[in-house]
Image (cartoon, rainbow, N blue to C red; front, side, top):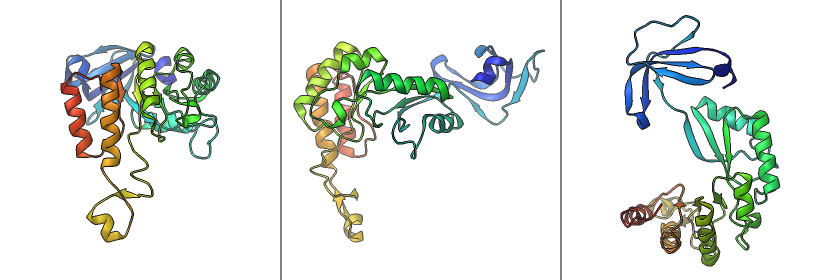
Length: 261
């Protein structure tokens, strides 16, 4: 990012794909002062004076990807990942924005922790980091986190990450508050009482291997509940890592009914 800001770059001969602008063609991309100046009508093999050339022949040139669900682990779990290493890996994979889940130590359930994460990201991150605030205090599902405070601090959504919000009334309250804040709720959809002790999908393979299985209903039951609550409150709901036919069917039906999911 800093390199692009210092130099004029001509990315030549790549397949430029930008669905937002309806672009899909072999073209050159001219960059100056960190901003795109022009996407040419075609690649003519000519590099303008003063531009450093990057040969993108055989490669795809596209807007940066956005990762909605990352674990940067900092503060508190730096032996797993850091903001520096996580954002470097993101950049290597073409991601220019990552949304950081709140499962840090301490949890991102206060404005001070969110501010700390954002300061660290500004100092060492090589891509944009957008924090996600916790739904509940400590991600323990007992009491709502100060969602208004977190929104003011700059979070772009709320999630308890791998800790599903099992209390339906707490989930209803979170969805209702999120409407006023204009931010989505992201819930890991899994009834852990149904899936207790399971290590893989329940079925013939689990039985053959002698492993405890997790019934598909552990996911679909919570997906169905959350869709009902989203319809009740009018909230925006994002359900990550969907893995069952029942969940896909429920989501398709919800979208057809106009729910914002």
